[in-house]
Length: 409
Picture (cartoon, one colour):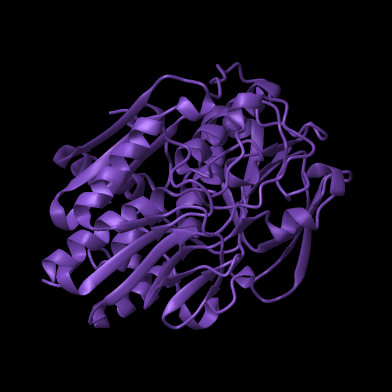
């Protein structure tokens, strides 16, 4: 029996595992290895921070959900991949080391949130990128009496060599891994403090390591700047954060922004497990270069999906799901199941929600890749769409079978 390991438990990996098992059935054993038995609907973690959702509402128990679909599950932290001998090494919850051979592996373990690169993070940093981060921020916001808030992202340490075998315009250079959550939190906080009657006591600054929201068209960026102007939000470009202090943040050039609360999407680097893996599996940033079918350019039994793939820029849930689906479809063909393989075409697709004010901004934009589509639509119906999408994810336990049809509605 062909053995397929899927590494990771978020959008890309879960889409690949569910899709592959649905396509090939008993033709392959599919096993997921993830560092936690729980996966979370991460697009709703900002909602946890502002108190409209609880973390437990967003939790999927993979040890129950995956076996229900005929997929094996193993809790364990991946330490490295030996691509030459087709082996994965991981640490079990009890601390013991284990190794597992594979015929094919789909790598979806994401990247690394490099908080260690920001001095003062442990003492003064807040975020919404992990469940525990969102809960900590929620507690801080509940006790906040007013002052300065800075929201932004750290630099993206993108790999460049070797390049993936895809059109060059599909992989633009990015200063930030993804600034959608920054935009969403900036809108959410306006609604949050308006509800608390504190708008006159809070001053928000949004910062970016490059040009803010550079993955959107110039017209969309102008629209965002106009929204910020109306909301009284200050915008600072080219601020590469180096240190968080009690009442300010500092960039690499010594510039400062006042901040009693700093909400940061941490610097983004390659996953340590991939950096520890067979050297020619990854690029100089620790990401896996692939072709358009998500197959490694060096090892044809290795696939990479989501943030672990060097061509997904920005690091976006929509692209993770697309790459997971394509990898599964391509592998199904190799396992003897004729399957149409979707074509990879990158597009910025996201919804920035503002639940306290009852609207969301729906974004669809491919201009960064040379396309002509540029839509940024603020509407009450978009808030409803995000609510329904959250319910859909939780109902399916992370099986995004209909995502390609729902993403554009």
